Amino acid sequence: MILLIIIGSDHTGIKLKKAIIDYLYKEHIDYADVSSEQNAVDDDYPDIARAVSLKVLQNTNNLGIVICGTGIGVSIACNKLRGIRAALCTDEYMAEFSRKHNNANVLCLGSRLKIAEDEEEMKNIVQAFIHNFYEGGRHDRRLSKIRDIENMNIEGR
Image (cartoon, rainbow, N blue to C red; front, side, top):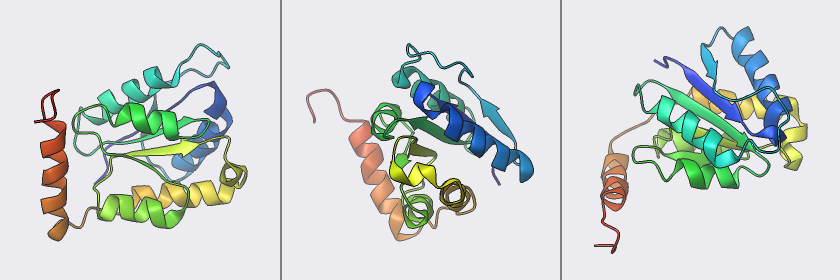
């Protein structure tokens, strides 16, 4: 059961973030917005990614949604934190299987992508991410290998 959706965006994603928050509110899904409502160009995406990720890590039942222009920057930044499995998803299938197979806990979205113009499709991506759950089984072995990579020292050993 999901406890809380942690959401944040840089200045490029404010409109998309508001649409997703409207969806979460209508669906009675609890959320916390960790970013500003201001269109400030100095709200760097790594800071937003870090804020979302740290809150997601506070409770294993939390999920995150983080938005920048392409989704790539926030995906890279989120995945630097041990225990975060951030997935840049551009369709429902990717969102569904990022949860089922990869146990993703942060959904990354790009506000400047063509798909972001379709508000209904973006809601479908969010819905697929939120309402699917990790299958475990054969995927446990693979996630264990990802944790091993996270725990490697700087020399790559």
